[in-house]
Image (cartoon, rainbow over the protein chains, first blue to last red):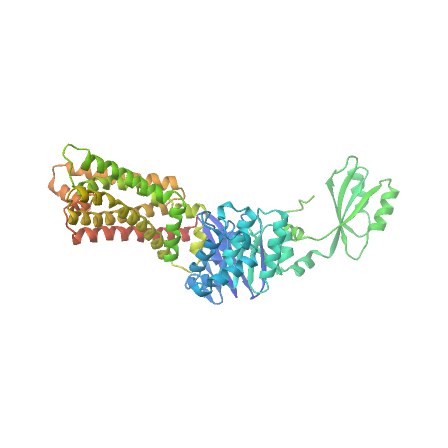
Length: 315
Length: 238
């Protein structure tokens, strides 16, 4: 469906996107993950035809964005990071304008707009001026704009940025629903979002793809170890030394003091070995009371940090 | 293209901009009308010279209409909607350009109230005035194209407005200064190349072929350059 091949984009001296290639199959929801400035927006801007690539190609259903821009643009609905809204227009009027831009038949325009208003739940604000809407509503109008013309592909650049938690949950739900009959590419630097919404994840860092897999597979890679956080009342050095001696512990590291007179320690160990009992015994023997033992789930943060090699800067 | 044109026209009249432009035009023209046709010792029905004097002031208020056109789209990122929609860049530019022409047309239409008033009390030169309006529209269209081009070069409306104003001013001052030189060839050049001087044949009641071609080709050139600027930006990036 979507094919990106050896895509490179240079802004002057800066290499924003460095030779990336990936494909997205019909009906997939793909998460495009990376830190700010990693090249997500640039890639999306190229795919949607807003800017041109320095080299490489991007195509949708066999149509290349350079040689067949009109065909590609007809198939894509794009919600840029900042929704492209005319603040002086009324919501409905704006969507009508989008309909005309995106070649929606004048006959079906009214019902089409009604449908979209209903879908993103902005029917109640359709007569209001866009400039007067709250950020959440503006974002939804932006999403509505991307849906005009019923494109097969939706490209959403950080669709939940700047929204409050309730709005974020609503937008995510909506994206999942849209994913039922659209191919969706979604970018984010918020990992739980991608974990929640997407089936496949592409991780990009400094313009390069560093991982591309399903979420399950990515979690498997890191999932052979389990991790614990313990809080010990005692000195840091002694505690760590004792913990490292326990059979099955692969790694132990201080996380600093969270409660006075104690130290938090992160432990990694084999999944097959439950170290909690030996841990308790050892620490009790050493006169270091354990105040807390907590399992830490493997999160996308871990995957992300492991892959991008940024070390363990967690708390 | 017409969708964009319609939206632009709407936005001119949703915001004060369209009204401000028309009001400024009517105000300045009203002052000139009063000064040239009414308040003098021997009032005259010569509206052609009123319009002639208006050309300079007109070129200075052009940025009111054109400063926003592309500068603002870039700033608010709404250009992302236009440039990712299945529509050609040339159509986007033309849509915006025709919208400014529409406002110009409405302005000139409203402006006919002055010669109509004159015709009640005197007998103005109807043919001369009609030719002047046609010339004025063509000249205006040329300035609009230049204004839109300048607007496409920047993200800032203020920069676009000031630059457009400066260009109009330099063009005017340049043609005035050069035509005072007592060198025949310079005078011929100025009268055939200056946007202001080209208008004078219309004032004489002549709808000449060559000034029409001149205005249309300069307008076309700047519309084309605007398209090129926007296309180029896609390659070099924002």
